[in-house]
Structure formats: structure tokens, C-alpha cells
Image (tube, rainbow, N blue to C red; front, top):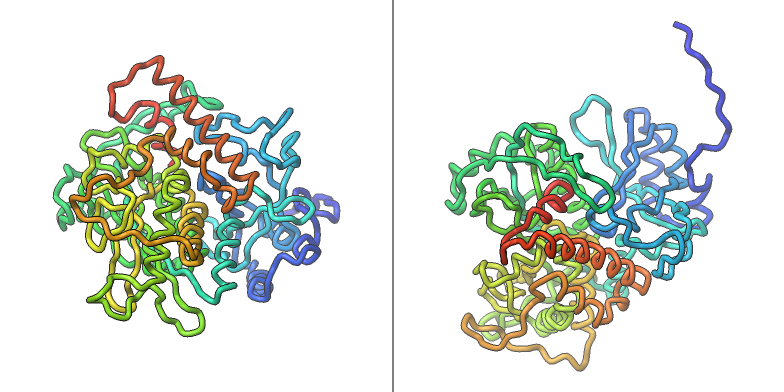
Length: 504
């Protein structure tokens, strides 16, 4: 059969620049080797999803043909700045028409930025009619500078600070989330728009819940969980365990320790694929902390963390004499760093109206007190493990937080503690300790602490200002709705369900 030969210009439309990577020296030797390997096997792929995490930690992507990706691999791909401008409900929170107000003049007029694939993150996604690959990109300005609003670049800078001191952070993921069964109904577009989220999906619980770690309860979600575990292993993710938590259809998933950037990338991929595969199977998965569904318990995201001496491989948190102290001096200093920055950086681990509900006094196993303890789940930081596996568990986060920013915040605060000559580590909290400072109990309180602190030390001024604008927009829209609807005090609202249940 005759096929028309469509004429094309030499340049690939939408590509940042033909030799953007080499011109600006963006890759190291490992990335260059990975790119060469990818190019040699692109004939085995049909489509490539070029992804980056927006400030909310949501995956934004373009799906490219092999021909387009071949050019974008070294030239980058042009993207609209929309993901930097919209809050969680897709309301425009950063004014790109007159004055963005975040010290990024390139946003004025909504001009493009460039996403460059990180070749070491390239991987095939199992299943599907088209052979599809996933690759994470990093954001750059057209002149080759790292984009000031890029969260992955923030984490890279923190990791580099550890490397300069010849040590490496090691992180483990422990993530709670909900699997529900989707019911027939509209897709949620009625009344939807910019800052006006439509009706959330109608769902049914998978089981009654409240039989913690019940094998029977896990069996009720196994039709989805078992294929999911196989998928995660196929992708090379170090899956460690899956178990049924307390809530109806609430699943906890843990991963073995990884290096920091791999941990954040894994969280982005894990959350995205869980939601997509659930939708394909007639389910609905959510990482929203406390959905508005009868009998649901809040979900948390616990980050396990330690620091290893790169030269010796020794865990710097392990005490010489465990009977005398649960942590080494370095471990105590790191923990104190976490505690000192806890309130001002809480916004990066608990970024939503809904997530702060978990930090209230009504949930006994949620962390409320800023302190550490060897065995107290109401404290923010818990000491876990023995010997060379001794590490800290920060129990603050909600599962939908931006993984790059949440992890960067903790690593930044911990390293600051380790490097400080003036921080005096506080003693462990007892179960009945009175007077301990508490974590912010609302998005309003968290945003105030963020603004009153110095988050630009970590984020840089542009991203700190941008996040404040995004969160203020979200908070203002919630307040406007609440003033009109007058919802019952302490109850998860319909606004929260519309805002977060589908998106996260």
C-alpha cells in the first residue's frame, strides 16, 4: 500500500535546542553512557513519557514518539510553565501576565522552559498495547540554568552538600494509601474549571477495616495488590512489604533503603503507576491523607533515614554503646536539626488542608509533638533498628507530599544539625512529657511558620515565594468555600474530597 511521504523540516518542533545538553554541560559520564545505551535500543520502544514532578509532587508529562524523543534526549523538550503557576485545584496562583512576583522573569508571558531527560531514569513500563517507556526529566531555563522552581534540583543540591562531606544519606519509604472500588457515575467534569474541581469519584470500600494486619483483609485487596507487587519488582523497585493497615482497604507499602534521589524518583513513579493501574482495573487509589469516606483512618508517609560514611560504609547514627545511648552524637545532632526546623519546613511534608487533619489530637498514633523517642509513635521522630541498621523514622509526612521537597527538607535540616556547633540535642520525649512544642495543626498555621522561617536557605527565594503563593491560593479558596457552606467543625469537607481525592 502506498504511504504518503510527508515533508518535514530538519529541526524537530518543540525541542529546546539541538545540542542543549552538550552546550551547557548538563550530564556526567554515567548519564552520557546511559543515553548512548538508550539510543542503541530505541527501536524496541513505541512511545516515551517524559515526566517531571511539579511543585505539588504530581507527575506532569508529554508522551513522545521515538523520533521526537531521539531529538529531545540531547536537545531537551519545550514545556509550558503552567505546572508552576497552578495550585492544587488548577487555579492560577502565580500571575504570569503582569508580575509573577517570584523572581523568575522568564515566567512573564508564560514562556517555555526546557525539560531534559535524565537518561539513568529511563525504563520500560510493563504491559500495555504500545511499548511505552518512562523517563524523568529536569527543568532548565532556555539559557541552560537549572530552573529556580525545580524541586529535583533542590534535592540534588542537598545531596551534593552531603557528598562534599564524604557522606551519603540513605532513605527508606513507608507509605500508606487507600484502594477503593470505583462505582458507576459521572467522571467529575460538571462544574469543573480553573480552581473549581468537579465531583470526586464515587467509590465503595474494599472491606470493613479495623482488623490491623489481618490476612483476610489483605486477601480482599490481593486481586490488585499482587499484580502491583509483580509490576514494582519488574521495574526494579526494591519492594520490601505490603500489608493491610487499619482503615478499610488501607495498604501500607515499604521499600528497602535507597539513595536519596532514587528514593524520590521511586515515590513519584510508585504513586503515579498505582493510581493509573487502579483506574485501568476499575479501582480508585488515593494518597490523600484522610478521604471523606465512612470509617477511613488517616494515611501517613514515614521516612526512614540514616547517613553513611562514604569512605568506610559505616552508619554514622549507630552508637558505640547501644546500652548507653540509642544514637551516636552525629545521630542526635541530625535529629535535633530535624526538630529545630520542624515547624517552618512542615509545609513541605504536609502541604494540604487535608493532611493537617492527621496531625490533630483525635488520632493517637499520628505525630503531634516535636521531639524524638526510641519507642513512641506520638513523637515526630522515632529511633528504629539495631546495630548498623540504627536509623530515624520521621512520621510527619502525608503520602501526597512532593517527594523531592519533603526529602530535601529533612536531609537539609539533619545536615544542618550535624554541622552546627551551637545546637544542643534535646533529651528523648517520654510518653507523658508535658509542654513539648507541637507541629502545625492547620495549613494556615503551617504556611505562617514557613513564611516566618527561612525556607529560602533550602529552596532559594523564587521557589520559596512560589510555594507560598500556591499554598495561599489553595487556602483562600478553601476559606471562601467554608465561609459559605459552614461545614461541621473537624469533619473532612466536600471541598477537600473534590480537591484531593482524584488528583492525589
